[in-house]
Length: 393
Image (cartoon, rainbow, N blue to C red):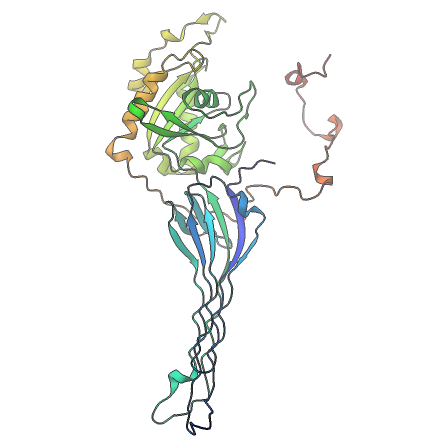
């Protein structure tokens, strides 16, 4: 089970206000004591608070109910009831909250220490001391406290980073992140080695730096839920610059770039307004032509690609380091452009009927390995792709 949790659904309830007290003062030295009922206490609120030291919603995964305490009842001698305790929910910066029943957007926590009242506690009722008048000197009633508020909310974490990596599986995104930062993402020669977003701080000149985020590879149809689909596309909504990565050995670099762009547009058209840079990766790997002959990537017309796509195009090799400095320079220039400083996105309502993530197994039986036999699956199995993993000899 991964420790990176970016989606939780929890039930929240604020505290109800305490009832006001109805009391008439009695004492032998005060034959006409009159009303002295105190007010009820305020119910506790449910408050969201940003915490930059958190990077996941793991601490909320198994805390399905968050309930603030009720306010205390008022007492005699105009004694106020005790206020209920607030429940403060600490969340990572970049957490977006939706209504769990309708999917409507509620709020977003952006800054460290920022507080947002999710559910306000009920006000305490007034004691009968407040209702005394010249014509009603002994009121025998008091206010009840306001009821509690409750709702089910969905919290989604959208990683905050300056640069987001976008590309198909095995485009070299994780390798690039490991080269330009101290991050250690998993790197292997098979698709979807990155299953959770990875963040790295990229060092630049004169002690300056910026944050880069790597998300799992996108495949065609990701906006409709294919592959890891919508599960991680939301993590690039807050990036100031999108770094597209296409391998140099790709048969059609422009076509792959347009497919990636189309998937982002289907997910959220606002993503097309972000600054974009295209990195042609793995230039150390020979590019094969139709006849199978190796072609040096330098023969690619980079300038023609720049004019055709209208963005900065840089050829890089994470293995040899070629083009890495130029890529950092291009990203730094884009990050410091005035139009890329303010990142505002509109959060569309989510479809609460779509289950984005299966629940983790709660029993040991679920953790056991399940064997799938070939005759139980109605599809053609390509056994060639399993060769070389130890059981085909």
